[in-house]
Length: 331
Image 1 (tube, rainbow, N blue to C red):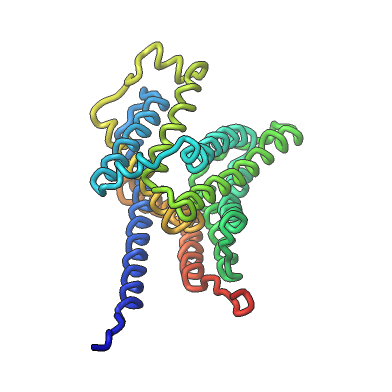
Image 2 (spheres, rainbow, N blue to C red):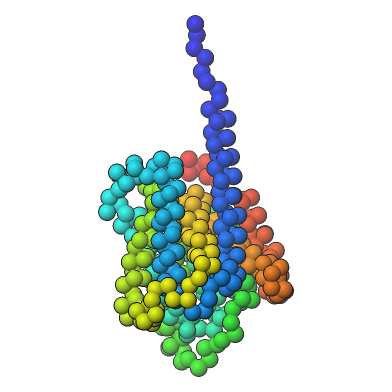
């Protein structure tokens, strides 16, 4: 009898792609809601006496535990750690974790020496640098329309940051101080942010490093650096004087758990959708924050937020509608 070749493969592939796109959409929505609601939840359930480092370290531990539980339920835990190597972990997760730590330090320096407008404008260039770094590392090209959408998103992010930012200025600083302690650090931090995001995407998409394993590794590396910083930091002194859980209540765990969930979602969105799309999610989350503040605190959205809304919607629509298409000469 003549054999009949299966004809369902294209349909099966399309079904899998559709399921993946739905998963990306779900994770993106959840991340936007988490990121947008986090400031309000932290403000409501975290007392002022709580030491920031204790909250961050606890959050990292919770992320590790949650990621390990998910991996165990998926049945990938044993296989993952059988194939795990120190060199692979340092390459895939250690380097991005160190880069993110350096980026945060540079941002703290820059924020003290720049007015909120300048800081917001320069800080949002990280979206553009993420696109550049993903091209250099992954050869992920952007269409002309997508590049335009990225600039629209940057403008929207700047407007939203200004609307939520403080009115502090840096008029008393000298030009050299503003340049070397403000502008240069925030630009370097933006480049580092783009590089770290692209490295995470490279690790997950090229090296097939599990996003959950990356969450575990980056949380451990970040915790070690943070723990080492307590040796001379004010938070370290406060922990030694008052105890690690000073000011904590049972309700303090709510923002910690919520933040840990966000960390896992960031890994999923970056690994499946990429660092550039993660940037769209984070900026969209700023609109969620403004909406929640209006609903629960009665604080009306600022003019900046109202202007930014159509820019965010337009940028997302354009970026999704006009992907880069390979030309015939490139095939």
